[in-house]
Length: 387
Image 1 (cartoon, rainbow, N blue to C red):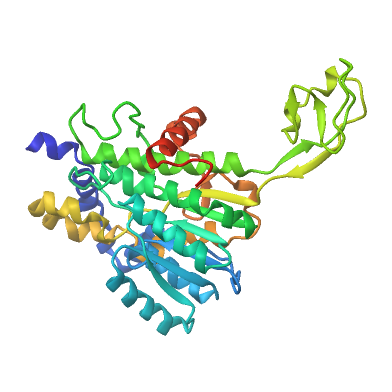
Image 2 (spheres, rainbow, N blue to C red):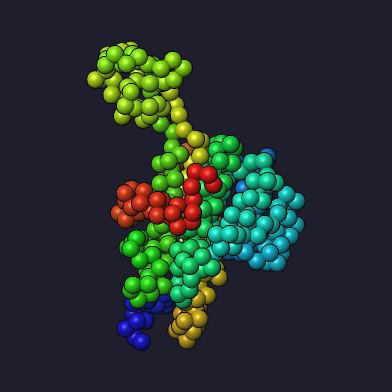
């Protein structure tokens, strides 16, 4: 048992905090400074969101609830996508009362069920006219192995597959509401993570809740990165050129060679090999941007599975550990920053922490893995062009 405990991330974190928490109590100023450092960055944007619609998954508790409160304070129409409608309605009532914004509603969404995701998307598209910000916030962490109703490992399904399908089903509405944003709450736990393409459910090897969690958080980051690539604006060539091989350009279309249809990335344009005018460059893109983030280590319900697995140890470490964690309001700041900060469009695909752009671990910058993950995920959730 001890060998297993020493490998557990909660134990390591608790051991460090047990020692370091002693220092702040030497003086009150020291404690205040430490808490300020732990709190991290704060979103300073005063942007208003009147007339905008925001969807937040897992919005009835933790940083999701704090994010919903902030969006409501800015005047947005807030759709709280929650698995538990009773808890969701209670949280929505509290937000409406404290912000004065009555345009806060709850809609049921169980990310562990692809059927529920599709139902949510159908109802949203049928009843809403726009979607400006989609915040993929909901998640589970370090839970015992279980499979969803669709047969997927629960952390990978809830944290990644459900959000992947939801985003794709709502992508046309995001495109119709541009400029729009997709925010994916990942984690620093993506570091050292790996997408186990040949064994996503961990059927062939022993299940480890930490490894499974790291896989799901890496998937969040890679998904955000690939989504940005697919929606990013590029300069395209819109020049009509007569072919040098005596094949005439097609009137009414934009062509530069028979082999390449337009629009295409100007970096791929073979005009240097074709006689004709100087290429005409035109901005092209969807207007949808995507961001991923690490919210910090936060005092939320996400820790419940670790606490139930090691109750005695958790009780010993909970006091010092809790003191060195962000509270939900502090943990929501980077999500809010990515959602509302002006001029962030050029950072689409980037990763943030403490309201600053950060360089993700090498595994989080693997564009081939991101591309492969997109294809695999699309197959698993049954996504096709007709969706």
